[in-house]
Length: 117
Picture 1 (tube, one colour):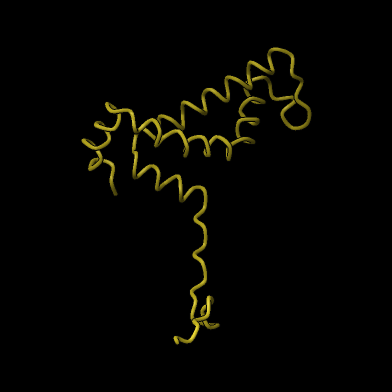
Picture 2 (tube, rainbow, N blue to C red):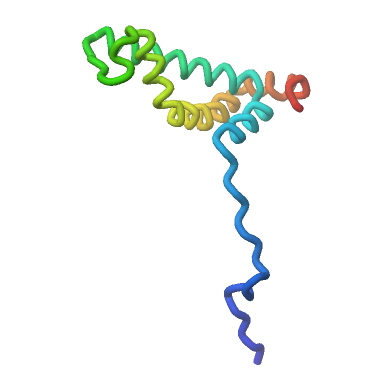
């Protein structure tokens, strides 16, 4: 009969979990992997968000607080910066999906050496 082995390691033998990289560090990694595609997706989403906020403000949404006196474009920019984590999350999700499109994937593989650090 074999002696039973414990399910947990003895104290002091385990390594602590690695710290989660910051959002900007993860974005830089995405840039190295996908290059100009990640930049294009980031700016496309930024443009859509800022134009969406601008249209909402022009349609009658009345911002209160800091952005109330800066005009429609200024308030739209401030609002777009407020949702930056959500925008970057969308970039993290959409960039690999767009890279799966065959012509885009071929472009990335063909030119990856140009933007690798």
